[in-house]
Image (tube, rainbow, N blue to C red; front, side):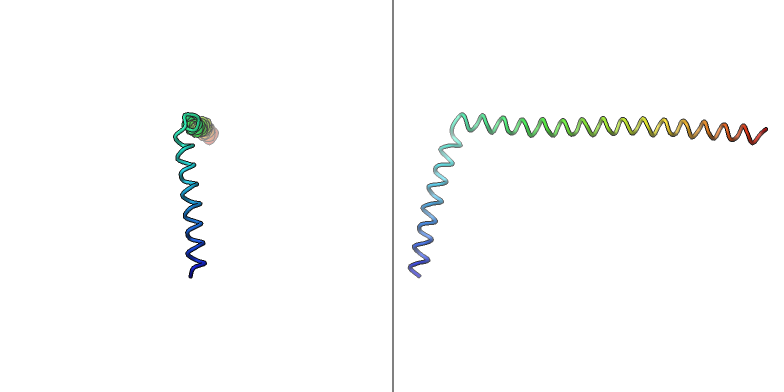
Length: 84
């Protein structure tokens, strides 16, 4: 039991020290600026992906409209040929 208590005490001290170090680092202006830059980069990447998807959707919307026009023209041509 003493061995377990010893290991838990060491773990607690280690975690406490690590947490203090993290709090110290996280309070620095450099850390805050890097976090802001990472956040901005993630946002910019998400926006770029969204824009690319929208452009792709618009492209395929145009293809679908063109296909519909061709289908209508073909139907008119077929109707015209049947009349002859």
